[in-house]
Length: 287
Ligand code: HBI
Ligand code: FE
Image (cartoon, rainbow, N blue to C red; front, side, top):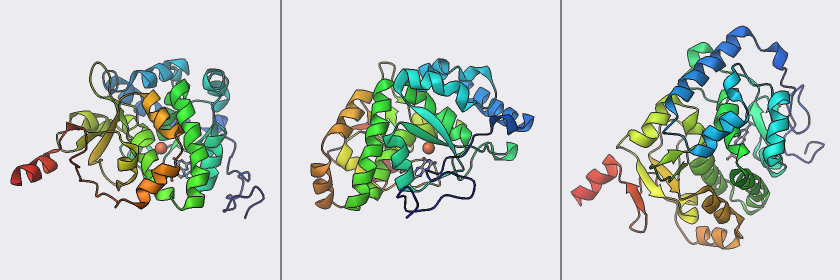
């Protein structure tokens, strides 16, 4: 146990809660240029694809101004809007540290940025994935409440041995979530909006299933971290997502005890199917 009661001691130079100084002045011109390349590519692509709250968040935090954002500059506005702030961390932090930050409206963002030769994929979330992908949605009050509720749920999930199920909830909403809009499906998941290829794939490609959000069903569903998603879950609204998370999870965990996990490619007869992916369609035709 570390001083703060976290299970894992932080790396050298980081505080007990794994935070470090962002060191904004130390970013090089090359690092700012990588951010600008990624930013310009994504903002050219996302209108008509990203959900309105995401696009509004880019404006609210004035992320158009160019260069890697200085947390000291964007935090006052973010805190005014929803009480959230971004804190710098060296990279992925242990689950209990992560939940503790979210439960206190602190989003831990990787301090480093990918190299110019890693534009299209990297293993660990960098500052572009975290700040461009996750932070704009935190300017939306409903989503901001959801992320805090998720963090608060994390501690209980850990006690109940349900971390994998909760990680699926994060994966299929915060990272790869789609939502309905009057103009059609829109993206709010950070893992999609921060990826050029997946921003196109998630809405346009015929191969993945796109299914209606159902909390227990989603928490039964495996996911893969190394490729495009084979299933996306669609929420009717951010309010519906928040409502699903504010309920008592006791019955949710009881339902998970009584049900088997589901393979990624599964389509249930009870699923609301927005699009049946080509693999599933071929299986259905084969009978
Ligand atoms: N740490 N910095 C950081 N960012 C994440 O998104 C993150 C993490 N640790 C754990 C984690 N995500 C996932 O396991 C979530 O499902 C909790
Ligand atoms: Fe992420």
